Length: 287
Image 1 (cartoon, rainbow, N blue to C red):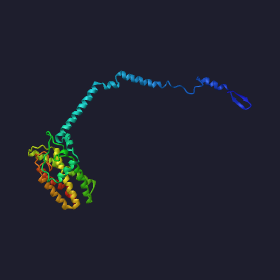
Image 2: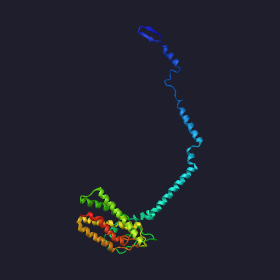
Image 3: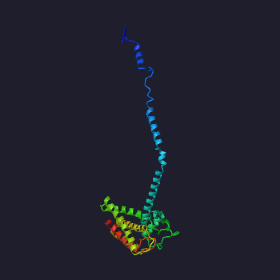
Image 4: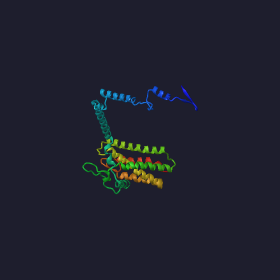
């Protein structure tokens, strides 16, 4: 490199920068290289790949319009509907699920009247269910009609009262409360099965269904609640007195098993067994 001497020292020749710029072969005013042409490569390749797939017959519309796919979907939906119908038919043989809505068609007035009828049945004379065009009237229009609302609520209330009674004896625990609930449910199922077996063995013609028997068997929880609460408030003598009174209710108002709705139960056998179930499930709750 040539340097020219001056009074202040050395200075670089001005033609060196121009020489370097001409050697690079680019315009001196351009700071960055143009790379816009590089990005076009992958996009072009992706477009060519899509075009190739469409040409080969792999488009989304062709898959949806494939007759084999449509046939498989139709066969699958038909098979699912047949399976659902089979399950519904088998369930309806034992528990008509489609009729459950009828047993919960209640209102506040019906619940009040039915509870009074269960506890004080002496003033009631007509125990037959009303019909409208060969169809039983909904429970909210007929106090004699069976329902599942009161048995379900009575079962839950009985479990709560049993927990309270166990707490007064310092015996409460979640495990023991679960045993109490499962025992009550198992005895209810056994009672219904026993009535169904007895009706089958004696070949009694009756219009009572399994849900009717379940409802009639569940009404005993109302008496069990009354007995336990009486025992908690007034001691064991009050418990035994309420048990005797409730048993007289069942015996005096034991309906004919061929009738279509009963308050005491599904027949003489059930009315006789219900006081035993009530005593077995509640006597240990009273000190």
